Length: 336
Image (cartoon, rainbow, N blue to C red; front, side):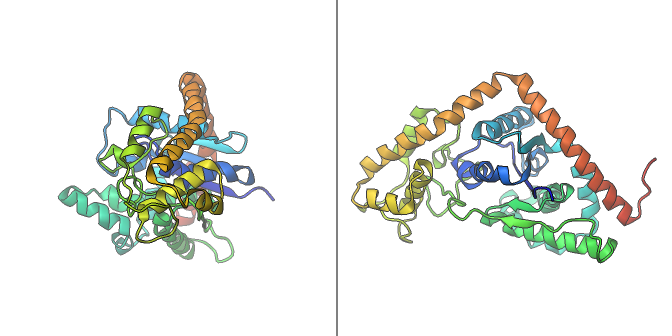
């Protein structure tokens, strides 16, 4: 029996930050040898919000290069661009036609983002979870690495699978596989440097709220100096009154490779000045090899293009087979 499949992806909107890396990509790297992995750059998702068409293609290559720089290994994983495999769009339409509207209107992320966009909210934003379901189901993924904020989307994916198989498949021969979540508990939520109660986000208008993976050392120094703290001396985890303290200690723990207990003892009597210096040095050292590998990949555009071309061909073969099986189940004629 072959390895189970994993599917995940990141939008090419802005630079990846520590939240993306520590909450998702580093986990992909650590577990990739256990699975057959499909990691895509989800550029179709990127246009569900207003985007810059002048930078979309370049941003797509940057994310793919960062996958490699962070340690995604082509011996275990396939890297490709979502829009390069047309089956994503086609299966989305088929699943749209069996997905009740109220399922999508009840999605928490849609409600939150729709409020911000007002009258300009797009059908694409409403339909985002169905496209995500198509991404997962095309590859018959067994596991999907998700953060807490994506669990509702995966639950909807599972609802769509059950509905599709109930309507179109034989009871003992499901067409679409029911995926399971793969959740990393520690570091799954890296919080903003300006507000420890909010998740670190690419969409935050303040650059000071996040550390980007490609930030040079001087920017990291500046951002950590400016990050929000509290007036209490001595640093402790898990105090609900000190969310920034917990977040910064967690960042140090994850980047240093130390245990929570080791960090708690090391930092319990520290003031913010010495701790910020320690965190800054640790962060710069942790990001240096990623930044060096990224530059090597970007300096060889032909190599990066070959990785994406190979990934596309491999992904396309599997995705098209799933799409064909779904269309047959729904009664479509298949061209000879």
